[in-house]
Image 1 (cartoon, rainbow, N blue to C red):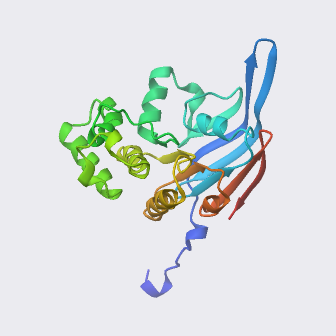
Image 2: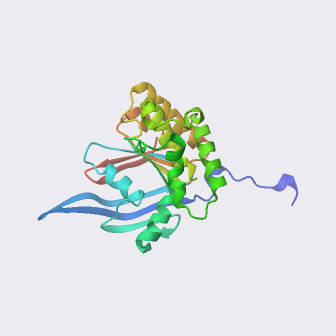
Image 3: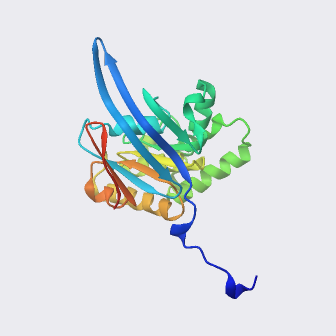
Length: 243
C-alpha cells in the first residue's frame, strides 16, 4: 500500500482499553441488626490513560468505592474486573499480588513509616515482589524519587519533611511499581493550598506522561482537572460525564 492511501485513525476512534470495570456493584455493611447500604448498582469503567475524579458529599460512598477499586474491600453484589480479570475469582494470596502489581495508592495521611528513610519507604512495596532483583528495585526507587523531585531527600526520615514533601514521597512510592492505575484518596486533604496545588500539578504531570489515575476529592477545582468527573450521591452514581 502506498503511503498516500494509508488511513490515519484518530485517537478517539482507537479501541478503548478498559483497565477497571464495575458492573452492578453494591456494598452493604452490617452492624448488629442494622444493614447499611453504602453503594448500589454502580456501573463504571476506567480506560487506560484516563484521569477520573470521584466527588460527592460526605457519606456518599466515595471511600467505599475506592476501597473496592483498590482490592481493599469486596463488593456485596456485582462484578469487578481489573484488566479483564474477574477479581471474585482471586484467592487472598493472588489478590494481594494483583493489588501490589496493578494498583498504586496515595492516601490523605501519607502513610509513611516513620523509622524508614524516604528511599526505604518508596522501596517497601517492591520488596514483596520476590522476583525483582535488588538492582532493579534500587533503580525504580531512584527514578520515582527523581520524578517527584525528592532525590535530594532520599536519606531523610518522614519527620524531617514538610507535609507537601511527604505526599511527594507517597506519590513516588505509588508509582515506583509501575502500576496499571493510581488511586488517590483525598491526596491534598492534609495540605495547605500551596502544597495542595503542587501535588495536583504533580498528578497532572504523571497523567500527561500516560498514568491512569482515579482520585477522590472534595475540592471542585481539583476535580475539574480530571478528564472525567464521577459524582456519587447516597451510594449511587449521579453523574458520569467528562469535565
